[in-house]
Image (cartoon, rainbow, N blue to C red; front, side, top):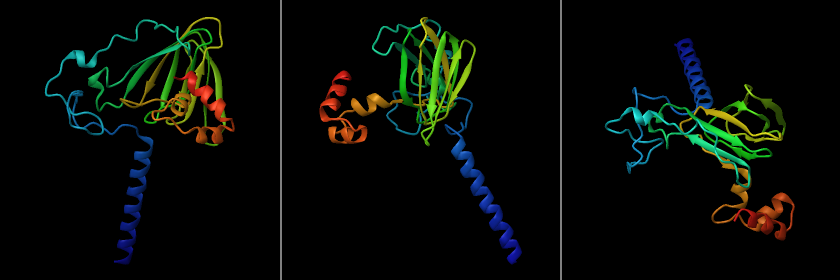
Length: 218
C-alpha cells in the first residue's frame, strides 16, 4: 500500500510539474472549437472575446500591411498591428502580426509585449535591434533584409534605423493581442501622472528635468 501511495504521489507531482511548465511556456490558451470570431460589441467581458453567432471571410482578412506607412513623426517609425481588434477571426488562435516602417534614424523606443514573444523579419533596409535580460544584459545585433531576430516575451527591446535609407519589417506574435508598453511613455506620460518624486529618485535627476521630459510627451 505504501509503495502504491508513493508511486501515485510521484505521478501527481510529475503531472503538476508538466502542467506548470506547459502553462509557463505557452501564450494564449488553446481553442476549443474550429473558430470563435470575436464579437467586439458584446458586453460580456472575458479573457478574450465572446464568439459571434455567424461570420464571413472578411472576419479573417486584412489588407493593411501591404504598403509602407508614413514615418513623418517624432519617432520616425510607424506600426500597423494586425491583431484581434482588426481581424476578429484571430480570436482564440493565439497569433497576430505587425508591419513596422522606419525612416532613416527612425526608432521603436524601448518597449515590452507583456503577452507575447515576437519574431522579427526584415523586409528591407538595415536595423540595429536588441533586448535586455532581467540580469541587465544587452543582447543586440545589426540585421538586414531577410534576417530574423527574436524578442522574448515580456523583455524590454528596441529597434533603430541607423542607416540612410528607409527600412521595414514584419513582426509576428504568439498572441492574438500581445499588448505593447512603451517604457518612456509609460513612465512620463501616464494618466494620472507618475509622481515627480518617483521619477526623480528612480532616474537620479531633478524635478525640473522630470518636468522637462514630461513636457515633451504632452
